Amino acid sequence: MKNVIKLAVSTIAATLLASCGDGGYETGFSPPTGDEKYSEIFPDQVSGTPADIQLLELDGKLYKGAVATYGTGVSVTALLSKDQDALDDYVKTTGVPKLENYNNRSSAKVNGVWRFRGNGSTGRIYGWQNGAWVFSIEATDDTLFDEAVSKFPYISKK
Image 1: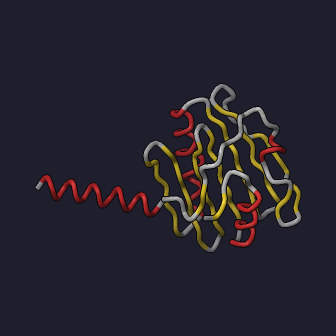
Image 2: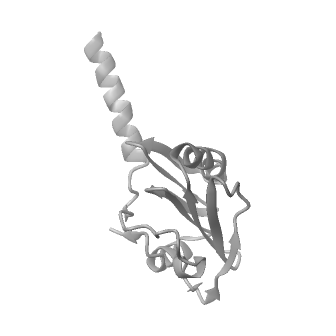
Image 3: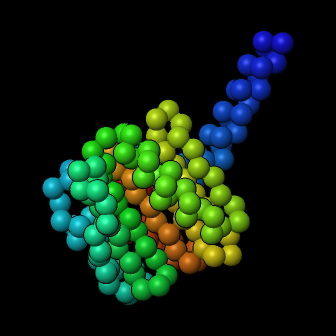
């Protein structure tokens, strides 16, 4: 019986890893130091539309972050957290709920690192943790999403 339970747990863990793995993206790049201006972190433009960078309304004792929007089709978010508990809370209360807009979605914290993603008729979202940072890219279609990925220095297609 113990072997069956161990096998079931291993199968569930493997399924979680596969469903919310790297999604075909490399995200192990060195994150920002935290001293950069947001204009140095975000792409200047996506699909010819310049970045409109807005600070996220956050508890400044725990976080600092911003979102860059490119018209109505793309947004890129970068958030730096002071500690892991705060980062976990942000992903659970802000990142994961965004997945409700997508038919196919998954989120997991595996080996202490968050990843979340979704896709469907409304577009795509992909979010990941890199150290004390959480990044996400959300777009209304695959072309815009792929362009945002290609211009954001903390992610690339494999």
